[in-house]
Amino acid sequence: MSRSPLFSRFMAGIVSVILLTFFLFALATANAAPLATTVVTPATPNGWGAFLETGTNGSVTFVAGPSTPPLGTGSARFVLGATNVGAALARQAYPGQRFDQITTLTYNTYKIAGTPTTLDVSLQFNVDYNLTDGNTAFQGRLVYEPYFTTSLPAGVWNSVDALAGEWWATGAPGNSTCPQADPCTWTEVLTAFPNAGVQTGGLAAVLFKIGSGPASFDGNVDNFHIVTSGGVDDTYDFDNSVAAPGPACTTTCYVSTLGSDSNGGASVGDPLRNIQTGITNINVGGTVVVAPGTYYESLTVNKWLTLDGAGSGTNVAVDTLIIPPSTTLTTLNVTVGGNSATDRSVFQDFRMTRAVAPTGLATETGSGVALLGVSYLTFNNVASIWNGVYGVSVSGTGVDHLFQNVTLGGKLCYGLALQLHDLHQRGYI
Ligand SMILES: [Ca+2]
Ligand SMILES: [Ca+2]
Image (cartoon, rainbow, N blue to C red):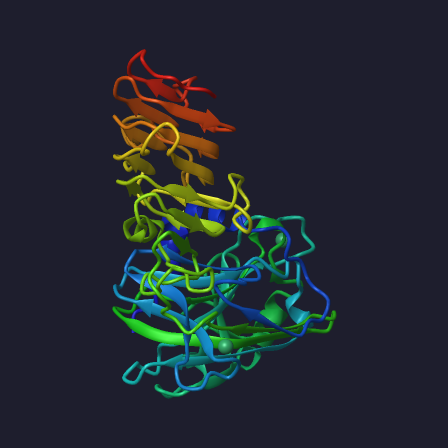
């Protein structure tokens, strides 16, 4: 059971990525009045987003079943395919919520037959160990793992009570009192940190997560219930929108962070997971519609199409952010352009950026957009910010591109991010 490297490595290596991820989460999900059950699906995510914190060989998708879920007909499915993968489902929520006011904290888990009893999806909060001290810096996470106190059977749905379980801390000061090797009961957490709670502002988050560590995992979560003495009473029913997979997309392909590449992609409720899969599957001249969220991809567009995100700002609840998985990769490589001046490829309503600020030409070679001798492209309401070399790099002669409402921000040593290789281009910014 490999659990020790999970968060120490995360804290040391990619904390900046995580910070950005959560900083970018929506600010619109503050403590809410008591609610009825909230059904969370790819078509209605209600503030939840899925992502891989580390690695690439894993996923979080919304599926039918397995078996009979505790609520609705489906659940959130977590799959790991390599030891370096950490897969999470998160919601920016409950900023400043004091832990001592939480009175109910339960969810249901499932794992396929054969899964060790030590493996279940964990529940986590981004934690502030003292909500009253004025320090709002990221202090890591508080993590509940069921196996510390229970031994859950595989192949059936289990109900867990996190307040009756044990918690460990990923960062200081909590990890001195509640290290992973000697986790704390909820009472011990509250005794050691009486003013602890969910972090405030953009770092407020509740998460379900599995990995990194296990070489493989296939399990599910549903029916998350949180009640506080302050009036919160929220139940989340993770569910599939439709009986997936639906028909394969042809003229319009939908993509969402809550989707799956084994879905058909033809409806907003049956979305694909990766933008590149949508580009691959769409008919020539079709449209790939990308839901809000963060997508870690380096895209190649090899056909006439429209790529339509949700917005070009920084709020992943309403905007579409595309971040290449490596600082040496270009975010958007266009190798085939539009059909004609009136049948253009259109790129609109998304933001291309880096997970971290650029570090220098020697280490960053990727641009935001590389237009490789292609023509008949329109960019509308697109931002290309903090990219390694150029916001947009254009090559070829006699090409015809139209830039509308485009925000460019190149590497620090370039004042102008638009690089034109020749003088035969018609560009409008
Ligand atoms: Ca504090
Ligand atoms: Ca459900």
